[in-house]
Image (cartoon, rainbow, N blue to C red; front, side, top):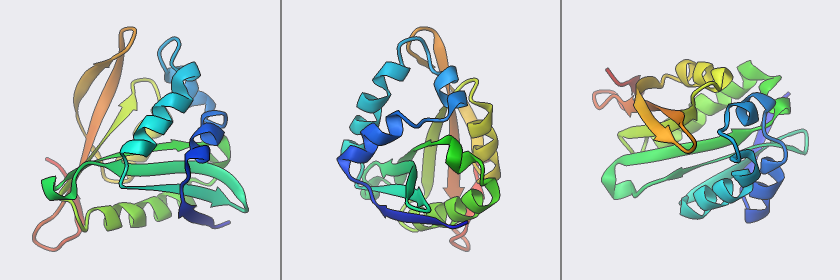
Length: 161
C-alpha cells in the first residue's frame, strides 16, 4: 500500500472532520468533536501549504504547516482516519520524508496533541518530536506541545534537547 498526496482543498477539511480516528475524537474536550470541521478549516486557511493524503483513492488524512518562513519556526497540524492508522510503517516512512522537506525552510517545527490521544503521542515520538510542555485547551483539557528541530551542522532533523 502506498500513500499518495495532493494539494488539499477546503472541502477536504469537512471530509476529514467526519473521518477522524475514534481515539482522537474521544480525547477531545466536550463539544470539540462538533467543532472539528471549523478547527480544521481555520488551520487550513492559515497554512501556506496544506496536503491531502490518499490511500488507494480514499482520503485518509490532511496536514499542513503554519507560520512565516522568515521566522524559522512552523506549527504542523494533521488529522488522520482509522484507515491511515492501519498502515503505521508506511505512514511513518512518508511522514518522515515530509517533515524533512518542512525542515529545509525551518529550524523548528512544533505540534500539539490532545492529552489522552496515545496513538498521536507515539507517532510524534517515532517521528523524532520531543515533549516540550503543556498548555490548557478548552473545558479543562490539556494540549501536549512537541518540538522537532533541524540539526544545523548537517541539515538533518534532530530532536530538541
